[in-house]
Amino acid sequence: MEVRDLPALNATLNSISTMLLLFGYYFIKRKEVEHHRLCMVLAFITSCIFLCSYLIYHYYAGSVPFQGQGWIRNVYFTILITHIVLAATVPVLALMALYRALKKDFVRHRAIARWAWPIWMYVSVTGVVVYMMLYEM
Image 1 (cartoon, rainbow, N blue to C red):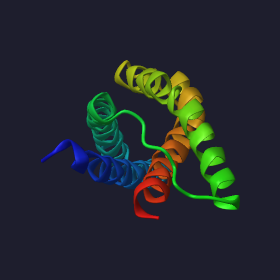
Image 2 (cartoon, one colour):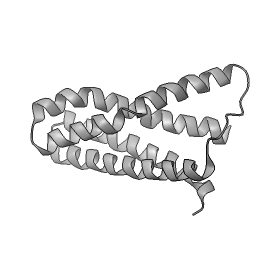
Image 3 (cartoon, one colour):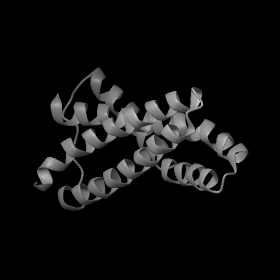
Image 4 (tube, helix red, strand yellow):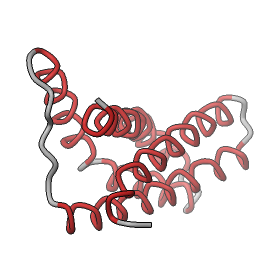
């Protein structure tokens, strides 16, 4: 694998995280706690691998300019800016939720997960959208 392959890997990791987050949500709504826990831990691990890959890519490649013109440029930057701002919160929120769950402090875990889950989902989905707009358009 070469550095130029990492954006596609990153989009794949974001897609996997999205699916794991969706399954984790599904399982907790059905009170299948063990399945929920597995999905959420795997989503966290997948996101950590993504972050490492993302940092490696941008260390070597720098930033990649968006080539689109017209109205799509505004759409891209709106998605990108919200993605970046919210992405900065995901590690903190996810770690807090994970820590509270591991400590079996489920009341406080649920309180943070109500914020963490939708933000994490948005960041995972928009990560794939940004990839598609930047590399596939």
